[in-house]
Structures are given as structure tokens and as C-alpha cells.
Image (cartoon, rainbow over all chains, first blue to last red; front, side):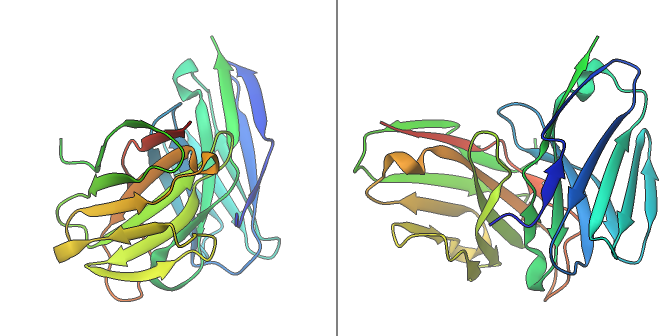
Length: 111
Length: 117
């Protein structure tokens, strides 16, 4: 079963705009990760935030984590058409590092 | 290319047939995962190996599914007596970790797309 719920399910924006995706989860976590998936391909790791961190940046990506609300957000600034993909949050909650993925947000960036 | 490799990329089979998929992880990675993904959904965990030991199997996985990882290198996922509901993308991922340590990240293959007619 899925651990996370992502919001929105789909997002369409213009190139240059910012895109924000949200993820909520149910149980305590060790860390939360975001992955990107282009159509028909495997997932690619974007960024990891640990349970004791509140915010993290990587290039045009900004991730926040609120463990009291069991939620995270991913912000992509100055979006490009090449950012068009599905984005998934994943939580590492248990022994051995199994990741549980959310349902994903499908992002479309129009040139 | 030293990434995670999955074969075949596509598999079309008739209901009731058996199918087997192969995953070659990144060579130094000791952890290997199988996930299943249907259209519009996130990957769903199936099973997990640390070296050659299968440490966890999803309760959602029927007895028709079996996975192996002989010698802790490549892994195979077999589905017996396939059903139309088995149609999905089967993803393999690997990582490097020890004991019960959490993962820093997973490296995914491109997946095997299974269509059961």
C-alpha cells in the first residue's frame, strides 16, 4: 500500500514559473526522498531530507519537511520544459531501507 | 553504462503463461529491490534482498510471484500463471547499505513492461 498522498495529482504551468508539489505521509520516518520519472522510464533520485532537517536546497530544488504535520513539499523554481515528468515522494520508515512511494504528481511545463 | 540493467524491456504474454525478468544491479550494490508500477500510480514495493538473502516480501504478493538473487549479484523475478491484472511495469532498484541502515537513495533500472493478453 502507498504511504504517501501527493497533491496535486497533476500540475500544468508555463516555463519560468515555479512548481510546488506536496506530500503527506502516515508513519514516523527516517528520511524522505523525492524522485522524478520521465514517461516510460525508471525513477531518478532528486533530493533527500532527513527527519531532523526542515529545509534543503539543491540547484533549483527546495524541499521542506514538517514532521509534526507529516508533510513535505518540493518547489522547483524557474521551471523548464525539460522538467516535465512525474514526481514522487518516498519515505524510508523501517528496517533495511525499503522506500514507500506516494501516488505522484504529474508536472507539465509548457514552453 | 554501469547503471541498473533490466531485461527484457517489454514482454507480451498470454494469460496462464510463466514469465521471468532479470535485473543486474550496480556491481557494488548489496541491496536489490523489486517494485511494480501501474499507470498513474507510484511504485509499489514487492520484495527486497540484502546480498543473497530475501529479507522482505510484500503481503500483497501472491504465491505466483517468486524472486531469487543467487550469489548476491543479479536477480530474477518470475510470475507463474500470469493474469491480466499482472500487467504493469516491473522496476528493479539497487543501493549500497549495511545492516539496518537507512538508504541514502535507490538507483532504478528502466523497467520491464509486462502486458498479459
